Amino acid sequence: MVLEYGINAPGEMERLVATAPPDCAWVTAIGEAHLEGLQDLAGVGREKAFLPGAVSSGGKIWFGPDVDKACRGDWATPPRALNPWDGTGGPQGEPGSWRVPGFFSDSVHLPLQAAHEAVLAWSAATIAVELGVDPARVDDRMRTLVSPPGRMSVHELKGGVRVLDDSYNSSPPALKAALETLAMQTGKGRKIAVLGTMRELGPREEEIHRGLGGQLKLTGVDLVVGVGKGGGWIADGAEARGIPTLRGENAESMGSILLPEILPGDCILLKASRAEGLEAVLASMLDWARTSPLEALEASR
Image (cartoon, rainbow, N blue to C red; front, side, top):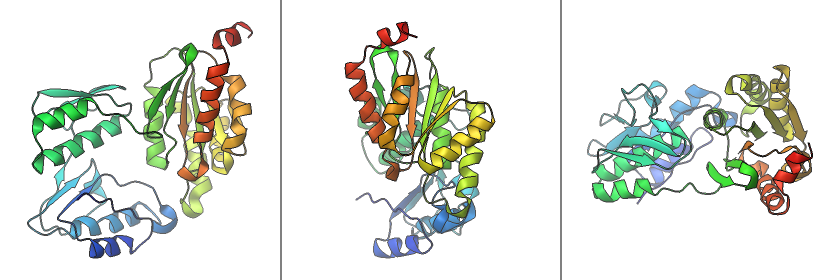
């Protein structure tokens, strides 16, 4: 049985491991998320440490990249760090084709957009093999992975417009990873970031949103579309650095604001916390793509 132990406040992990004591534990990542309850990065690390701390000496512990820097404890068994590119100088490949070590083959190309997705997929595969799953079967499964809706899933629209739908959820580290993926897209059109509020960031939420907006100049974003309160703060930070912006009160209102601005070849990222409902923006775009000839739109500009 595989269980996900999700937390957003102190004491929750202790209750979870008491309810379902783990035989093995994988701490995938530690970042600035759920700060409303966990306060800071150190608080996130302290709370997540209860998970590997509950594993006995006969079990296994796996850590994602850099987890050991914030998740510390007296573990019953040494954690294994999981990173397919450890010692290689960084990610190998490009969006849609990340090369990772195989378990039956020498290497496997993962058809995923984001580098961090490739790390997670390969890490899960490593754990599966260690727990007895056939290596050849694992390699075959990695080659055919498909991102679920809202998890950096790709929509190719007419006119070469590409939508990266990463709207399922967001946090500062997840947003940075999504923007890195947007920056790596190879199309010749503009890169547009449609960004909404990141929830559960506590009293520093405005500071964090504005700060991330101010960093967007470094990612090559050509247009920032701020959705809701947090998206507006991000847009403020981006605008202060000279990036053009659009703003909307909520996801439902964004269609009429964003759609007239789209040009052939644009690559558009959707990213916000789940409660912001950015799938409404995607639905508007898909409906628009079915009825709007982009070639005629470009000719009219």
